[in-house]
Length: 156
Ligand code: 4NP
Image (tube, rainbow, N blue to C red; front, side):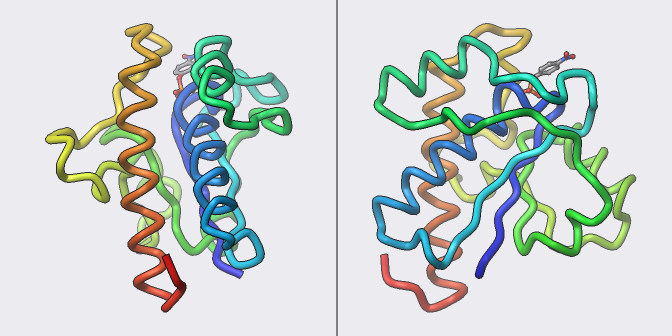
């Protein structure tokens, strides 16, 4: 099993969106038995909450299931449990490096979508631009799935 963890600050806007989109793509590709997906936040403020209304709306409008999502904070054991720890921006990256200075399995989602011209998925909790964020997340998730399939010899 290949395990992928998406990480943002609160785990209510960006990383749960990425979890739902990525899982949708994994299932569409028939790879659900090979790839496990989860998400977590660096902070604990929203632990136990459902995703933000803006995230739920962009997913629902596109027919992407998200009913299982509940926010949680990242734990030390996640760094050994997950093969790919994929965060949203440079602040998340710095936060993850503080928790796990030697973690080599940490990257940013838009590392896999150079065509977007962006490196950070902006935080819609502050900007309100959930549709723009969705477009970045989808591009990143498509690139990430291709990379994982290439790394592991899976069909795509
Ligand atoms: P997220 O957005 O990291 O994409 O889930 C945020 C949600 C909540 C807060 C910050 C960012 N907050 O400060 O409560």
